[in-house]
Length: 137
Image 1 (spheres, rainbow, N blue to C red):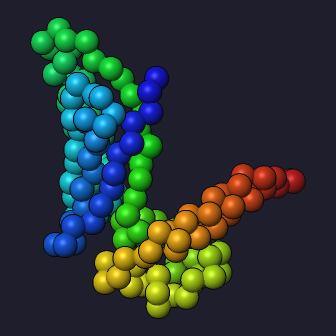
Image 2 (cartoon, rainbow, N blue to C red):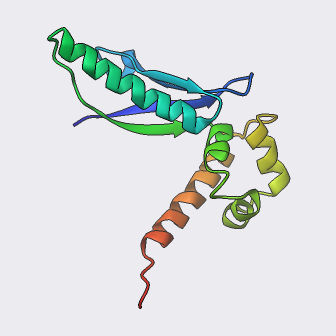
């Protein structure tokens, strides 16, 4: 099964959208979603995927099932995970101060590519560390 990139972005109006790059991924159908939060947009996106699959089955067209790899802009990521990862916690993980992270979360400022990489690398390292946790009873 192919993995297709889906992009989550926060609009200037504060709403979120999720979309695929049909041309770049050479897909025969498009999927998108929207919502007031990143989670709502992702849920709507998956609803659109299910509707597209159903439509293709109804008209007897072959449907390529795919998996999605979500790519976030910084504001969308911080919003989506804000209940799990606080700015304080993210500061501890990345070394980026909360004020700067807050600017990214609100969309007031956009991080430079080097900063995006720094934050992404720190989160991936944290994820790998958490993946090695085992508890004994």
